Amino acid sequence: ENTPFRGADSPLAYDPAEVDRADRIAILIPGALASVEIFAPAQTWKASGYAIVTYRFPGMDGLPLDHRLGIEDAATQIAAFTGRYPGKAYRLLGYSTGGPIAISAAGRIRGCRQPRPPVPGQHEVPAECG
Image (cartoon, rainbow, N blue to C red; front, side):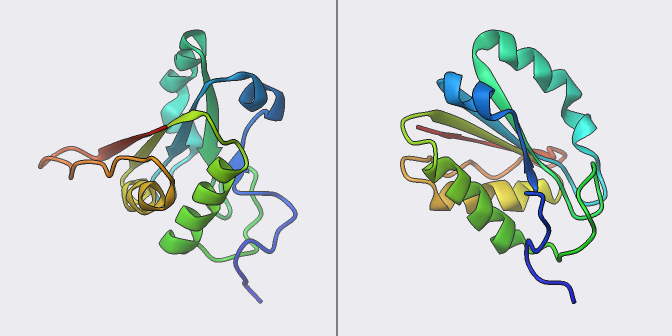
């Protein structure tokens, strides 16, 4: 039976030591059926002091296909993650399906500015928190 986040692995992939050290964290959320590899260029942000956290969809990027994806469930899990690391600045970046997840998560994160709606043709939705 598919239940939310039943798997042993978290949909959030990151290096805990890197997150602990960083003052700023970028949470990158791809579109449905898209790999987190679409955000490969964002790895250069590490040089600017960001830790990188990626959200993986069920059945993608090594995450088992053993739970369902719900936009609100994903947003809740991302917001809970930020609650475990208070005092850090967050940048949420969602592409396609990741956009609504980023917007919903931003609304749940304390101190987060709700992102402006994307302009026609824009598929990435950034939000800054902290």
